[in-house]
Amino acid sequence: MKYLSQDTAAFPLIGRLSELQRIKHALRKPEPLLVLGPPGSGKTELVRAAIADLGQCQRALYLVYTPNVHGFLLDLTRALFERGHQRLQTLAPVNDFDKWLSQQTSVHLKGLLWTALEAEPRTIVIDGINRASFPMYRFLQRLYFTRGMALLATARDAVSLGALGRLFWDPRAILHLGPLHQADAAHLFDLAADRFRLRDLDLEDFRHKVLDSAESNPGQIIEMCRMASNPIYVSGKHIKFAPLRIDTLMRFLG
Image 1 (cartoon, rainbow, N blue to C red):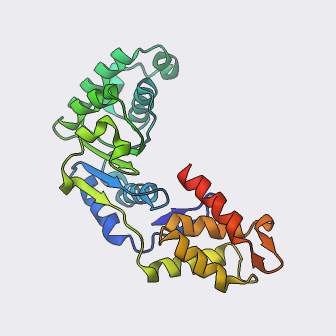
Image 2: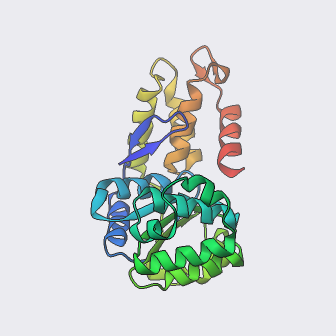
Image 3: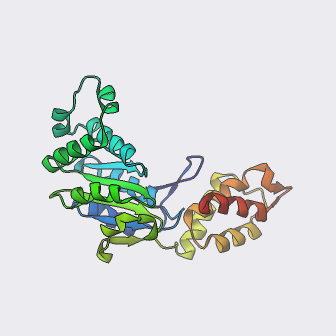
């Protein structure tokens, strides 16, 4: 279980064991689940860790959300083909798959995917939904109600779902990622300070400001520690917190 910082350094998913188990349960069943949480709360890391932990015992496809419906259909078709979806492979040519895929219309791909997944269901994980359109909703609606299928999605909040809010309406199928407990946040700060070699700097004031401003958001804690390793935010042993914090907020709230 890992958090990933911007430079790909991995950190333990501290304080998220119950949330990880909930996601793994949804993947095993399979059953629909919506994971909501602000940027940096660990949504992506949790779903990836759950998929990795379960390995081949479940058949989940991980897709990063794209608002363009045709682009999403292409990504889904390719993912199914590369994961050896047998029904799809009987409908699409094995030879020169890329050329064939580039020639398909959205209408044809929708029909092909509905046919393939109704015959051989999969769990589809859609990470980072943002203002989904009604055409996207109409395509996924049929899959959502297909026997044996399950959709697992992540988003910042319910508003970000857009039209897909019509699918994820049941509060029992929604997992909210809140802030870490204070002790877990402090432990994560210490790990990040060690990882980014900050121990030679004045950390007492910096630690207080990071934990207070991040409000126990793990991604922000890691990112502020990573940025503190950049000389532009350091004067002697002092970390210039104000510009560092502004740049962190630009990344997380932009």
